[in-house]
Image 1 (spheres, rainbow, N blue to C red):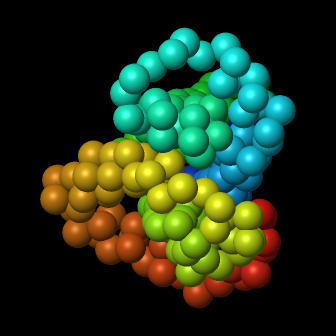
Image 2: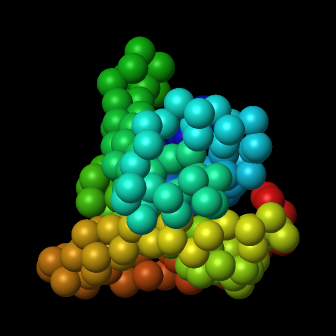
Length: 200
């Protein structure tokens, strides 16, 4: 995400808020595509799976047995914190760019609230990551490999993003102007060009 957070795309001095929102949202779409590809690679890589199986301690829990059965080498309950780390890093990069030497000399301004960046990120991940096993319509570019992803892998992440970020902001946001702009961003026709990208 870092190399895609170019100051010129997020500078609210020269870009409208709606334009900056769209740039951020589309960057998060690409980020979610890469995230899915990485998780899928971990899930499908037999070498990594065998490494985890041999190094993990014996456990009688049904959840651990399910992970081993599906060759999962990452605990799905850890994904929300990983993705939140991505959101925090992205906002930090966007916000701190104006304080850099180049940003100061260019007079860069970034007048976007953190909660809006997180909402755009959560919306992008919810759109891109498959909701159920074999689903392709959530992310039109999803390839056949996604059908081999067990349904429970993204369940904790999707629940967290929906309830803790998307739904909460939609309830708490007091300014109708921002709420309308956020909804317009995710429904912008210019996002359709991303639908043809096949990322797994």
